[in-house]
Length: 305
Image (cartoon, rainbow, N blue to C red; front, side, top):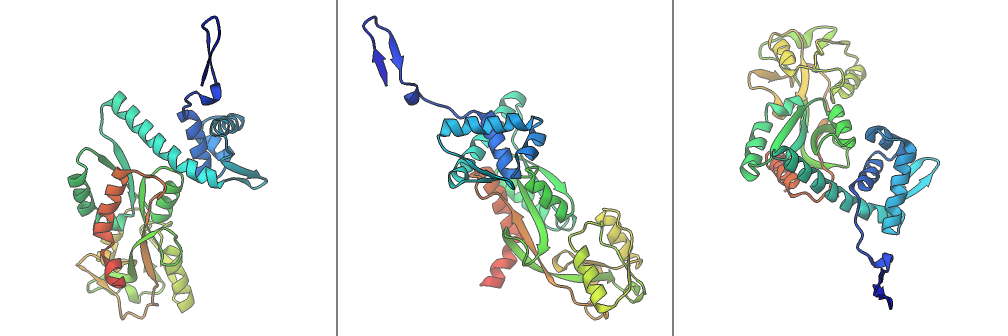
């Protein structure tokens, strides 16, 4: 609303003037919400803790509501803050996409994390399907152990992550359940060696604790070997009968053998889960998630029908 004075001057009611959401304030808010810590957000944004706190207070002034509850344990979103975060995330995505395309003239890139065993079995079909739906978008593929991918997603380094986890542990979307099985050379005898030689690709493999516990419970002495982080190296060692491994049944190469009756302890089923921030309304990320579901989620539908 404006007031017109006798001399012709116009005074505007500032409370009714159009306001805007500053991306700097939104980024401080979104980063703090994601990390649940002002201190961690300040480190991520390379700012002082006081500056981040001030930016959040300024955003709350603009919105007229508190976005965080603060106590000795840190910060947590208010109900209003939950709503605000969904909008902030979308606005920051649009801001970053527009800035990148206008300054670099390059297509958008989505960051996808997938464990090594699924890289070689499912990812080619996923990427081909997504390229057909969104040819203008590139995918930056990261292959790493599931615990590493889970942490990278939590810290905002990935847009989507496919993660192998014990079936009952994750609240994220379950794509498929699969049997964890012992795998050895087609005509090998490494499974009979004691101590049992086991290669699990890397020492932070998602299956390591499960395998170690099963062997300990069964009283099978074992030695973990050749954990180089290279799945092809582990595959070569198993083919050469220098060790056995444990993989999801759907990822076992055709020339290797599932050791069903080798006197080894049974292993539990694992879930393949999709880590995706459901609060982010992003059609491009949704399209990549759909391609992942198409090629990894069929077993779930079959089991539940």
